Length: 329
Ligand code: NDP
Image (cartoon, rainbow, N blue to C red):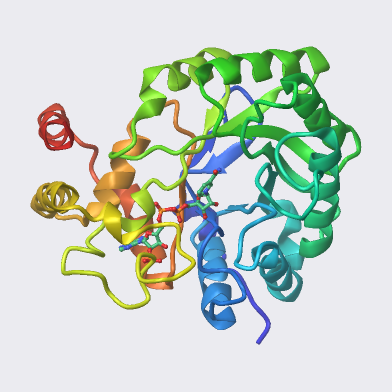
């Protein structure tokens, strides 16, 4: 059936300016790391992507290696683009990345110019796109001069294969260097994609200040700690959950008694506020004005719809933040 998007979609979402740039990103973006590979149900992931677009989620985040197998999330996303979203390309922000192992030999990993530019060409082919909106260096490479990696991003932009440059997983110091080089090249760094959630707060020790000072957007990934910061595991490990999957990156040993105690205590606070823990965890990240968007994952339309409700939730007050901090300490 021909897809017709919800005509109210842009009244439903909040759009935040990405740093000092001209680009607005939705407060919630959808990532395709898990649940969009060849092992996943195509009808289910098509529904998730289209429901996201109907809710005003304009930004879809990919990487060369998402799947499994690596590359399949881009291929599958490309199929949905082709079948349903093609007429709306100018309403979409599509990102991809290169930085982790993708093909054998010395040129399929890390941060060389050779790898980044070849990988971007492959990503475009897989998705059937002429350009992506954001191209990221997925991680810093200690063996490659950062100048070379940033020059590759700059080239991608000059080739018209990417509109904006981003970096991911760079610490505050690495970020400062990368940002300076990109600035000198005339390609400002648009955005940083770090891991950030209630359980992993390293960005608060310098990175957020660096981004704020330099007018760079921030889009935290795994804001729900891959599902730990939800009610998903409160009654054990449900079948089909990320922990239960053999290829998942969330291992059973993450569910220590101490973590379960924290999740339960946070869940109590969330229930007291009349919301789910997932929403409270997203709200907690979005409270900082330096955050442009939270980059969520979802394995079902209902999870996506639940998380979307955070936009209507009341902010956390000082007392609640103190209580949350006490649990996290
Ligand atoms: P989240 O922390 O949002 O975890 C998503 C998972 O949480 C879902 O798959 C689902 O797990 C569970 N979940 C989501 N909503 C709910 C809900 N309302 N109730 C219960 N459970 C829920 O993010 P991800 O770890 O998936 O990462 C998001 C994106 O970030 C990725 O897709 C990718 O684009 C990006 N990323 C970037 C990285 C980088 O290095 N730059 C690294 C990792 C991710 P289940 O599947 O069990 O249902």
